[in-house]
Image (cartoon, rainbow, N blue to C red):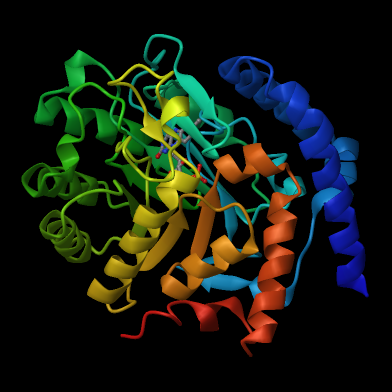
Length: 378
Ligand SMILES: Cc1cc2nc3c(=O)[nH]c(=O)nc-3n(C[C@H](O)[C@H](O)[C@H](O)COP(=O)(O)O)c2cc1C
């Protein structure tokens, strides 16, 4: 009975979003809308009355979805992926939207204005976004001050990346930049992510190379960070390179992996060629439906290789509960999304959680943790 109410509530909000709000929002410039939604979210989060009202309209909870992972309590597995809340301005509103956790950033050692505009394109039929932001953010000093006095209601992950500038291309300078950012957040947030997979920055992805990653992780180890550390993986590395990264992550006792970041391959069969042809050839990483399969393959691969002993956060192309459940059954304990939220509306979090409860019950699981890796026997 309770769930029928939530289903009806979500269907009405989803209908209104898709047929009214989205039609208006999708007519406006992508980055302007992103900036305005952040402003609105920050404003709504600042007032308890707004937070409570939004929570009543969007929240859903069930003990089946609760997990203790890496020493952190998650009330549900659905998180906001890095890149939406670049400057950590939504930590107050995120719990009311129903998220189980939020990852802010990616945050860099220096403030960074990002790549030249335009740098965001919607591919509506492909259910995807092309992203060429280039790590636009206020930098670790300003953002850590913003968060220092806040009390979080849900776990907050801090995503760190190397400043997008010709000055951080040398490995040594790149490492210093990551370290500066990490030092600002030693006592802030519940987990750290080292993003080694931004597809849009100066110098490419040097820390996917095991020699450089080893140097970086050695220095990170020296900081004696007390919270779980994850690596945000690129979706398209050859297996030998993934194996080396797994080996290093294990050696340095990292908690796990986020699978995965944006894809680069424009020939992906899920991308409609006429849509991508509007985006200049060399620019951007691609999210959403086209990113789903590579992310799922990586989840399955890493789950097998690590024998289920590392935490996997599944990310890429989650638009509904079935997409989410697939990632869980392949080996992800937690999930993140951005594109699904933009295309489906804010009720998507509650819809996924409600749908997950239904799917878990149907398959005879009492808690979500029992379903992790169910399709990927070790
Ligand atoms: C607008 C936008 C900005 C992003 N910026 C970042 C970022 O700064 N750091 C990061 O690790 N990933 C970033 N990503 C990648 C997402 O975190 C995620 O890995 C990817 O979008 C796949 O998930 P989705 O299909 O649910 O969007 C960004 C994605 C989008 C759409």
